[in-house]
Image (cartoon, rainbow, N blue to C red):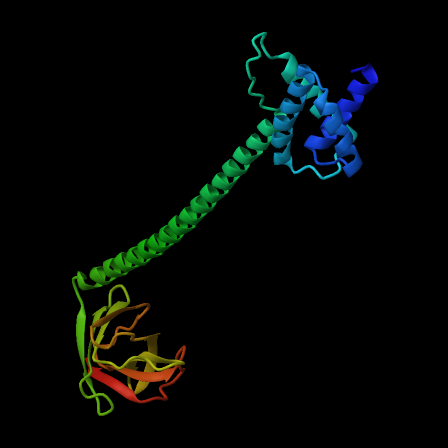
Length: 266
């Protein structure tokens, strides 16, 4: 073939492997293919292999001039790389490498995303557990501190013990006050008192000369067990009087207004 015919063969060869020839061009290419040299046939064969690899990148039906030039360049490179014995060369184009690399990158990205999600979930769970443990530790520390304060009152060398009995509104109720007069502190223990209603508190009163003095408010959340409370600033040196417990509005009242649940005299 002449140089112009060879150029035409290359153009039609590219169009054929990329399915871009018209019916008339297909007839023309078949005629040229019958008279093609061995080298041109090898070019056509290698171009088909390369084009199949390039299909991984989803080229359109109408390839650009750049794609044509790359295809022709790689096909000739494949032909020229064959040995003198005509051994077949397995050609892996850079497009196939790029496609494979893209797939590997996507797999790695997906794997890292899943790993990060699992790590974040694990960290969230651990943070929740740590927060719960810290809350438990704080509650235990508060409970230990409270028991140490109560124990200090019980260990006082000079204390008064006042027993309180339940009244008609709660005949099974029971209570006692352990009073350390020297330090102005006392320990209140109550049992069998009903759970505090909403917006209510129990209020402890020290009654002296028929005048009630508030000694603080408290709540009972579990009536089935003994409840202990520390009474602050009970600085009274009276040798007679009484302790009483009434049910009052939440926060307490200046004077008793509700039902009396427990009463005990010194």
